[in-house]
Image 1 (cartoon, helix red, strand yellow):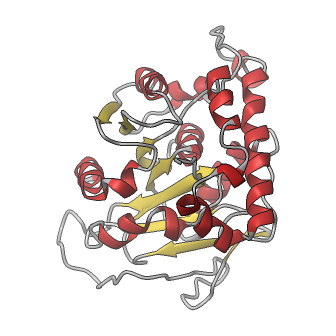
Image 2: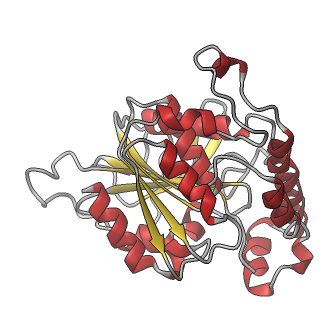
Image 3: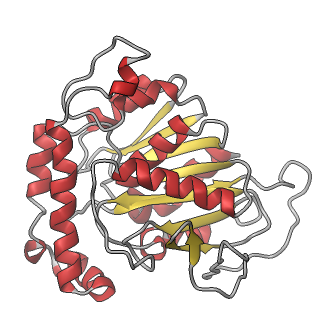
Length: 310
């Protein structure tokens, strides 16, 4: 069983001193939590507006990279980006992995999926980094987290240095809905995949969140083609199912799209569409990669991303 993960973004920042020296404060692998209001390193959660968002970072003195997991299926920054938090070059990057509201340690509140949940998470992610006093940062987004990252890069271009997305889609087709309905019932998932999530959330919360996500993202397949906001600036129309297609041309930062050729949840054409509509973007295929390619092929993934971000 391969599953879609719950919208986390990894926010990665190039170090302030990267071009001058490779020396800097040591950063050991582990969890460092910061309370935004006071930036205390011993606090366990981050206060963002009236919500609590949990974050993990490998250092605090370098410019940031932010990882965003999917906004759909539950996980956590730690479980979804372990190999990146552990192995990416800490002399070059500060890595911030966060739990959006309703996921991981950012509960309460419970997770919900209103029509604007992607935009809400994009704003939360950007607000978080600004509260941490990072003026510019790069975004790495997996699956629904890739959608969150695409929206953030389009809506807050002055803040985003570079963008990496994988397992992401800018629209939802009827075929996608069929795939999502196939994973609606968590009782049919393999024990290997299901057990750690049930241990993290409990069976009831995990099952209900999964069903709610399927319903929430499937609604995009029936959504009208373009927003009123977009109609004001262009006559281009998009088919039903658009999540953020109309925003892709607004993305100006260097962008890397990675796609696993064996991804059972996100067909190849989604990655190709994103590549075609972000000017100057790069598309990298991993022939054996599935939806969780950054976990299974962590060394190859980390090298590709680090080379792009340098």
